[in-house]
Image (cartoon, rainbow, N blue to C red; front, top):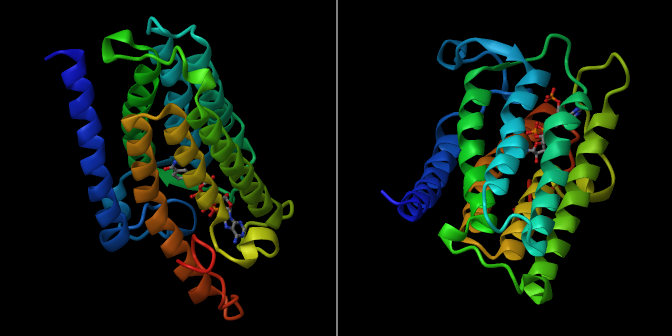
Length: 260
Ligand SMILES: NC(=O)c1ccc[n+]([C@@H]2O[C@H](COP(=O)([O-])OP(=O)(O)OC[C@H]3O[C@@H](n4cnc5c(N)ncnc54)[C@H](OP(=O)(O)O)[C@@H]3O)[C@@H](O)[C@H]2O)c1
């Protein structure tokens, strides 16, 4: 099997897995972390590890793995691939090594080991697809004129917008818990007046921007994968808010203001 065949088979596998993940998370089982880790089906999920380290373990391959794969490519030192590499790392370095330590955790918060274990494998696959397409000449990477292409700058603008939305929304959630608190409150203000999960909307925008900026099938598959994970989660978070708080604003949607 050539590297090109392997690469395209992996792309197809992730596209198909996205559909399967969406079906499973929407209709069969909720990923058992955070508010949805209620101990139900604990036998199925198996042993757990501290949530903070679970985040580091599952996200680090997206930063370190991406860097290793990217710099194996002959085009790694070209300007546009390096720019795309940088924005990927800005997001994933923060997500892997800073964000886990900013989350306000419940005392003794744990996550089933199965979740980071599966995430390590899938995050490495996604990192491979997105890093190799930028710098591996054997896959046809050619971004030599990409700095003057408007798709790069449009994609970067969408990425930047998503980044700001995602970071601000996560920071607002972290600020809801005062020192020593571990419960849930209704988030108020800004995009939270319109939707329950602006952090997920921001995340989907980030990877939509990435797909446009890299103009790659890998980027498109990553948007599909992210949406397959976060849309069902947004819908179940939204249902959870409405079931938990009697005074939860009725006009608020789950993920897309005024729509869904
Ligand atoms: N690319 C992907 O496929 C992907 C997948 C998953 C997550 N992510 C990203 O990772 C980040 C975190 O995701 P997540 O699913 O953990 O988000 P989340 O469920 O919104 O929780 C984020 C943090 O805020 C706390 N929190 C949430 N709602 C709260 C409330 N009403 N009151 C007080 N605290 C509250 C949570 O505490 P608890 O932990 O105690 O619930 C957690 O520490 C997001 O930026 C998301 O976009 C990306």
